[in-house]
Length: 377
Image 1 (cartoon, rainbow, N blue to C red):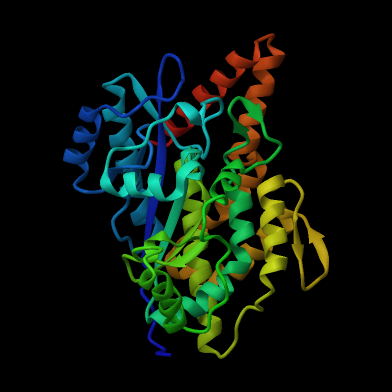
Image 2 (tube, rainbow, N blue to C red; image 1 turned 120 degrees about the vertical axis):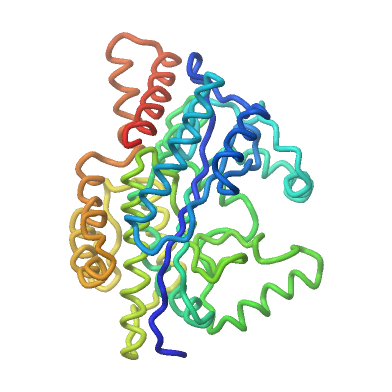
């Protein structure tokens, strides 16, 4: 493999739900709203699978500071356009009380084909995620880093959890989104692969059979991007707060560089069996940051606070390189204030304590999510 320094540029994609400001219920995006957004955001915004969703993507950014400016502009513009229709975006992985059965999908060839191929499974896809792209060349290096970065996916998921409610009920999970997404084929942790050639051959086996048209239909938690020369981390629930999204992006970028530093010294992060990493993925999905993850080297369950401190220390050199230490240290704030899942539950509990009924309490959660979306704009 070439020893040139990859650029490690980053790009962030986010999916939002649109809600009515008065009822807090989901609302389909009016045609005029999408036209307004597209005219102002020059190809950085698009419809998503469901009519109540909207997707944005930053430009290619060198640093998280650059990404902050672009993501803030994107969020602000979508919020401004939506407000003209008495709507608001929320950046939560699941709407607290919406019924997936009442949603309709966007009438585009791509989504019509998807609806036909995936049948009843895709109808439940009332979920929103965040994807972080990191620019890495050559392609074989992307595969090598994918194998190693997979270990950290549960850590990233735990910090990102924003989907405790589903159809008006507390699911007991912190990321219910992942439960829904895992019903799709070709999801979950990526398999271990030896080279980009092996990845291409595996994809071609399905493409040649007409099962999929290209690698964009492979929805692993971490994958080589179909469209860009990047490694795309897809494990995250979308973040209500802008700064928390940037913290997750900064950690992802620094992790990629840290693992690259090991690779050019003929070292690597130990690759554990997918079965073991899956157990941590489940713990993150179920408990978020409250119960810790398994350190397989120690053979112990370690509290998330300790794991985050270790991670910050591990990424010190890379944080300095990208000037992103403040964003990475934001993980401490995410632990202190709790994930969005925890904050949503607290809002719900407080509303019930105030002698509110469950329906009103769920609407209070949506109002809280609207406030968090606008807080950093």
